[in-house]
Image 1 (cartoon, one colour):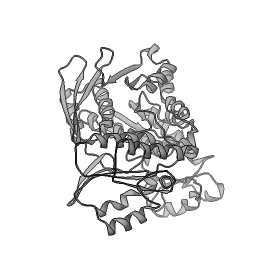
Image 2 (cartoon, rainbow, N blue to C red):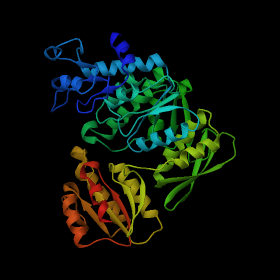
Image 3 (tube, rainbow, N blue to C red):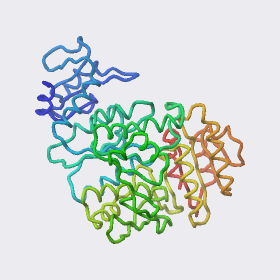
Length: 433
């Protein structure tokens, strides 16, 4: 591949003509509202050495590399590079917790290995190849996150990343507008299992999750001895066992790997629902030969960011911030965890769960019913979907309306759960606490 030789000489990829590292290669990607072919020349002027374009009229000299499709070329280049280096790749997907689990796995493996892992949430058809193209010969392992909101997307990302190992954190009700149903979610996530069955080595699986075990069974992974199980129910079948020892507010666990002595882990994560994410990281660390001390150190070093399972203490309140994203499964888990917390003056501020399509009205009503079943009284709901529900709580159409309310009635001396889909932008209210 001639382009690959060019990439080896210029191993920095650029997709934004406004941010062009010197001697990088610009890939002129297209979107719904833009055509980067038109900015290829500007990218060269701003520092790029070459520009990959797929419209002939923009290829005006030998600095332009004309291809049939820029996105497909980027993906093919990433796949070729990944195979040339042969670095073991762990692919991770799931409805909830995949970014947190990816960060935990990376923190653990970094105790022993030089690893590459997905930054932020660069987990789609563009982010995955861009991550793979950052692989260097010195990397010993790669952890690649894969996201999807339509059928077939995990299959395509697996074909690009070609993972040796896989982990699905869980499956739940998210992106139902794109998947059509919960069954659609399961089928799409299981595409990672199908790939590992055909081309990979091993799947790490939460043996307590019936949906995951069903999906693995359909992929016949157990028939090929390609399952490594972790569990919160002590059993001889699982390689890793752990139980929650405390969650007030930070998650603490006692874990056991194989026949080794138990060890304690004191995380900086909020929420008992993160126990399965921690155990996934323990299982992977154990498989790759880390000691229990190394696993413990890696997990205890991790501090959540980007409004994911964070505890923030302000001058006036304590906040449990989980406002990066929300769907019916993660919202339910957060509410139930908050209900179990032994703290006073609880307040919940919840934003709409987006991308649920025809399921939206029913799922938002289910959440309101759950709040009432758990006897929550101090609840503020934000968004048009929550406003449609039958509920006794205060509702606000937009986050700006809520901010106006908080200006008039500031909250002090409370323990506050803040959760909603990213599109609701609940992070805007954080300065009010």
